[in-house]
Amino acid sequence: MKSYRRLERVLLIAGLALLIVSIVVRLNGLVMARAGVWSFEAHQSESADSAGGKPENSSLDFSLWSEKRVRAYKAALGMKFDAPLAVLAIPRIGLEVPVFDGTDDLILNRGAGRITGTAKPGQPGNIGIAAHRDGFFRGLKDIRVGDRIELRTQGDAALYAVDDIEIVQPTDVTVLRNRSSPSLTLVTCYPFYFVGDAPQRYIVHASIVDSDKTAASKFNSAVQKEKEHTQ
Image 1 (cartoon, rainbow, N blue to C red):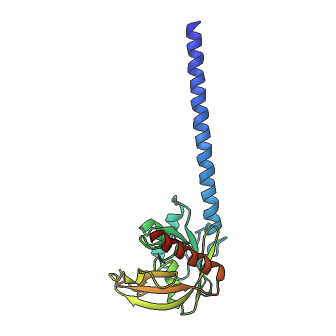
Image 2 (cartoon, rainbow, N blue to C red; image 1 turned 120 degrees about the vertical axis):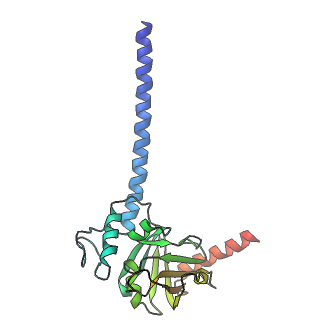
Image 3 (cartoon, one colour; image 1 turned 60 degrees about the vertical axis):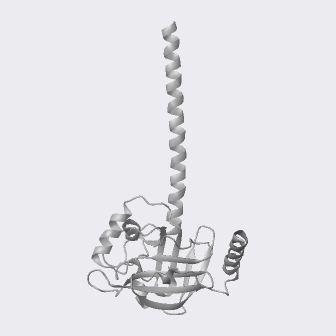
């Protein structure tokens, strides 16, 4: 009888353990599914079946990309990434790219990356975003002063206008300094079609658009709160 009761307790404990594991797995699955939904909503998953032109079921255009970058992008599609921070869009040049946190090789193979040490989307300051010149940011070769740039997050969208374009040395980090108003700085290598490691950096500066009253008000409010917090 004692052996039978001992066996019952063991089975009960084992059953509870399996139930707990099942619940944890389910919760984790729901969390990952939610992240996946946001990733999909932020930037539709591309089918990279074709190395030239537009892949099936995708708005992504590979025609300006190098073959090396297309291969790296396809490989990155099969890897696990956190949900993007935002989506960067420049309608006039047909650019739309997910922005991830950081600028390591894997991130830049998959999209654009927020430069560590700069503001995050939705924060006051200068948001630095980098991407490859032979991939997503190749289109920056055609950007002009006055072009509109939209940075979309889960809940908000901020609109910027390009006000300056410059070419600097890789060591020039002053381009990422905070400006007089909330701003965005896009960084890529230059020249765009240089063979090998490009020796310079192409910099696009944009400031938040004053006429975008909702976004401007949000940023100005955040700046004021930050000032009050530090006083």
